[in-house]
Length: 308
Ligand code: AHR
Image (cartoon, rainbow, N blue to C red; front, side, top):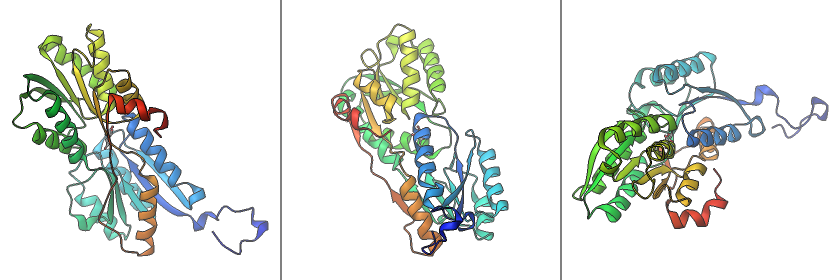
């Protein structure tokens, strides 16, 4: 804002030519986590905070997301933020943004492109989330024969890749065996239909444990288990990642057994990084936000104070 603003110009809001124009290429609206993340970003990048936000949600289509970024470049925005659907395929469009002199800041998910092609990244340690989920599974179930099915996130996405890797490393050498692993695309419907397939193939009795790469797919699995006459959290144990409101409620209700958090409230930190980058200040290449873990008892203690 302008410290000597003329009261006749209509108040405190900065004139639109003073606003920083930011294009944000969001993945889509696949999950409760994503809704919370979009809200956090829209609040942080509000006009009140000095921004004009151009928002695009790509419905989890990598090509549509790249097209949205090209659009931002053509519009000549001041900065571009991307929550990349998948890790691969970013080199060309990131080079185009660099050639146009538009800084790119990544939030949430990572890319496989060279880090010279973006200014910074703000997000969570997906590999560590997988390790924490796997360590708990190993501790609880690793000593008895345990048949596990996995509900994977979007194929090619950083969280699906890293959560699989971290979990598998943590359960290596235990008696947990992976019966099957398929993508449910991070959606509730996807988790439900993949779980229906697992139950049809292996029977309720043939499955001991579900590892879902997010809460929403775990919640879909709960619906499938209940529809088949099973008791989620008892007959079939469930471990998920995110700790969004519906997931935490299912944990308190005993239908999920353990949740590793993935914090979606990244907006304020991303905004700080964008302002620093545009001001020419030095920034870190990576900003990791902390995650917690919750047992059923721990969830009951904190559920009323959760922000998302
Ligand atoms: O990239 C973060 C993941 O994307 C969240 O865990 C999942 O719920 C979302 O769709």
